Image 1 (cartoon, rainbow, N blue to C red):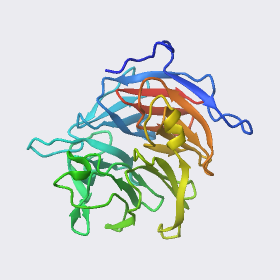
Image 2 (image 1 turned 135 degrees about the vertical axis):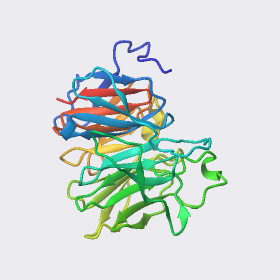
Image 3 (image 1 turned 90 degrees about the horizontal axis):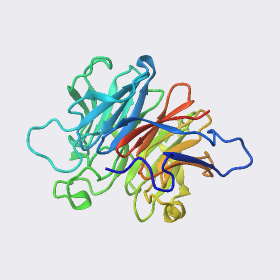
Length: 322
């Protein structure tokens, strides 16, 4: 278990660093964090459900989804199993990873264990571990391990498919696709958008849905990417938005870019080196919510965009931005 604090900052979970002097900080530089869930193996995929005033998020190794309701002091189990529904023992990452809601308010899951994108066949306030697969593979070959997922205003689904969930990783004998893709599901059809990014991880669309951002957590070339989209959601052009190698090299927590969300102005709040990196749409590092002693996997805002929830290894953090 990673301790709550470091010896140098025994009373602090986070420290806000703001680098851009030309604009007001997007977060109070004196902001603090509160632990509202603990004891996880690896927390991921947070989703805020505004109608229920509830946060749900995955614990990937535990094969469970947890929940935290506004007013609760700690989180509780929401759904189990979440990602692997078989009976035979399975190694690797078994649980759900990325989660999102579609336009009808149904829960969509990246199921690492089942190696598919699925929808939960139940209402959000009465969860059941009964799923329908929306996509199991591409061109007759099974996905590696769907990781993160989003939807757009037209109810199209976008997701990443790195190799992290496979028991043997890149060389797993059951791996069928020889690349790691970013896909879209539109009208029930799976479309490959890009296959040239190694270890594609978090992803998001700009507020006008004209740009798609993708995080690569490749140890050798970590980066955030940005791609312009046409009116049909296909990639027109793009490339690296911000190279994470310099950030990772000087960080205390040397992780690559992971899951992220955008604020109303299109700024990226991304898990990455040393915590939550705040990046402008132009690729400028604006600031950092430094999280002491833990790797962060993802984050999400509440509907007001004034509260940020962070999944940070074994804990769930709540941070008031202003």
